[in-house]
Length: 362
Image 1 (cartoon, rainbow, N blue to C red):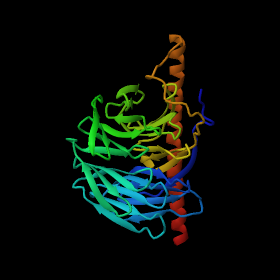
Image 2: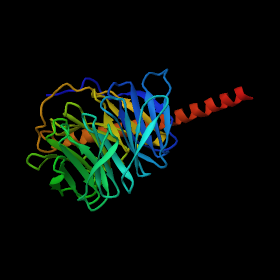
Image 3: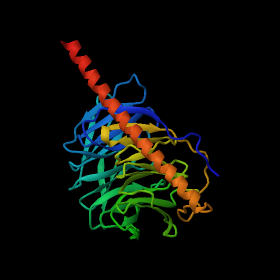
């Protein structure tokens, strides 16, 4: 049975964007963090406290997706301005613009070898690009509504896409054919990604659910109803044993896929996106204060996914379950109260700092 070494705890706090943070990603070297925002900027945060953050300006509209290349030498950003930009994450902030989409681009991802990019757009297409030549290669176009997300499989042979047409499609990159469509989501599909071993996919939906499918048998493996609002984003732990999800219910959920159960609920956020780093820590965006938080939750086990669905309350007397549920509810209220106090303290500190700055200027 797997276990986490430590409970998630707040490690760092970043502040600098002027509007909602929409996307976040760790550099594989764990020295930098990239964020995209509705303020049209890309920011690169250096994890050493003494290092300054870089703000990159170039997009003409909101940045909706961002990712470091596997080597960490490039950052790709996708924008509502219908372009993708490739940035060098240094003080100069040089970028190259890629154009081919005719609508908002909602998702961008590097292949695991760093040679290709895949993008998803409101123009109903998925497009594949070459990174070295910085050229558009081909489109995949069987969706009949906006495409929210597209991801390469770990081996780069397949692409999965999620659309407002309420389908998830699996594509063969070599033949450019759709090899299967999943129609089981009760609402739109906001986000989808491959399990690290490439045999499963997980999807986040507007029906408040998270579903995990086996793409070899096309069977539903797990179905989580742990959020009370739209689920916007999810990320697998590198071992594949855990899944972190972000929802409009202002919580993050960490799911134990081996046991098929909810492991942690993290409060105090109005979330669009969250992500596990390559080493297994988690990074979150805190939309309300336009900041980023890093949580530590290392996992040891490398056992395969093995539970068919989420099972709640097995072997627990109803009276005890009710009492535990009440205690958890009270703890949730306490957590939210502490969060509000923390936010008010931050505002007070900001105002005090502003007063001191004004006094020094005068």
